[in-house]
Length: 205
Image 1 (spheres, helix red, strand yellow):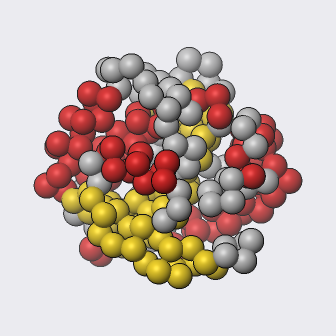
Image 2: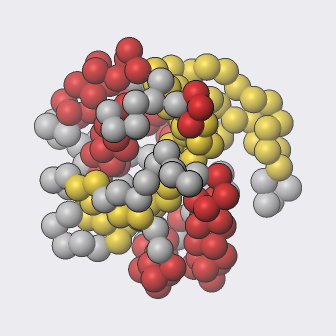
């Protein structure tokens, strides 16, 4: 049975995305320790000791629901510096979500996030022919919300008490989207961002 999203490697000037495999475990554990991202309670970054289970869940989502998890490598030295994912895949309606994204602290003020979003959105709207792409984040994750809005995504609404988080709190989820007709302007904006001096970026969205 053919898959809508096949494994693919995406490469740019600042970052490279490659499909997640079990062999990435040790590098992912090292990457998530850079900045202790797992201490940010509203993000999806795993604790270093829980990386193996996190990988198992991501790969199960790939096999059972058509998702495509990636690791992020910095282009200049191939160091693994984060992870991201295409998921909530709706092939019939040509929609998906980009999320489960986190980056090592050492690359949060670089062009890595913008270029990864440019490559992922380009693949979604180009090769996959998406009608729309969603991005979601915690209502209280203001850094992430600001980063998503800088992409040019629009807020569709807020799902109140959408998820029960591991710490027992309830997450209100902000749902943003980019539709195909908006992609050329979003792409131009991302390309422009990659040519100007960098400002701090969000650790997760």
